[in-house]
Image (tube, rainbow, N blue to C red; front, side, top):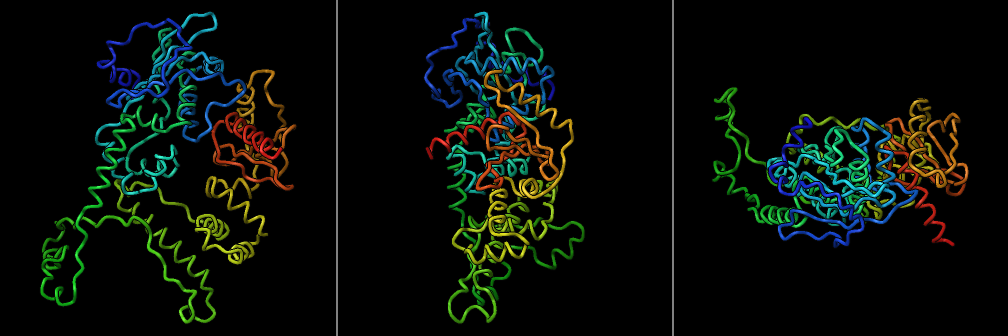
Length: 480
């Protein structure tokens, strides 16, 4: 999308309030999250300064900042913007479809109104997103918990809806008349990342739907789907007399049509949950020599994966979705242990999975933790051996250098040992960052003499390190 197109889409609705507000009322006492009656705009009071702290703790907040940092042409402007946001110079932030607005104060006391624009979703895109969300009850539950799990964003992308911004999507408009991201628009974006951490509905409002309207539409669609007439079950006698009424395409009609086949009937709604396997542990049910617990675990896993494959097959544009890579036996054992419900995974089965893949039980436990943080890429970072390119480490060093003020900057040293070439530990703390083959930084913490995964990955090493240090400090305070 061009810069002129992005800026033009909201001009009609915004002409009346595009004044050069330079009052600099950064400490404005605006009520936090005061929504208008039509749920079309939310205003957040100015946030407190955050010296020496990253701006995004959630992966979706970091994705927002990545779109900013990958787009801006001048890194020095972004650095100044981070400093302005860290010092609390961003006033109340107004969020509405396609636009966020705030007054940002300079160190000399002047202030500028700054806006960042992002094209809202179309009505058709919202329809696809809502249909997708209703199909998967877990997505609605996650949003209500103020979470945006990666699979929600992936499923939305599979339906042709991009929820997160990409390169060039965030368009700046500022009273200082800079044509690229200036310190004012950068500060606004960094402040927005903090708001997104607290509530992903802020992101969806900028995409065009307020929280109340979105939940109302999801409720209406859920009720409509639940009240559909269930497919009829036919007895043998009815099937013999009423075969012409059974939904489907008669074979004679299909054969006569040749290449002009009639449309297939609409498939029934997806089940809300995978089917439950039979209980095989009762006497006389499990065949002799078969491990009933292991067979139940495999059956439950097969049902869960089958439902997911069916849902993907019925989603729009499923033919364009990339195929999932095949897993090795070692990877699949970890996936099975990580995804199985706890009651089905006894210590005995864990021991079998560990020994079957050449691991000790503590190694499997670490592998399961890594998988839950990021699947196969996270497991590769834990167990793989590779050396990152020097330019990747140089970029990380620059990002870490710019993220802290001189007095607050942690001391760093690079560990380039052979299996740990992707690690970047702190010299004065028992924490570590590992650079993965996927280009992301993975946090680790020393536990009982070995390095353990400590959270999901991020593209920004400074934010990942800040989160890691904060959680490590809280852990020490909790045990003190």
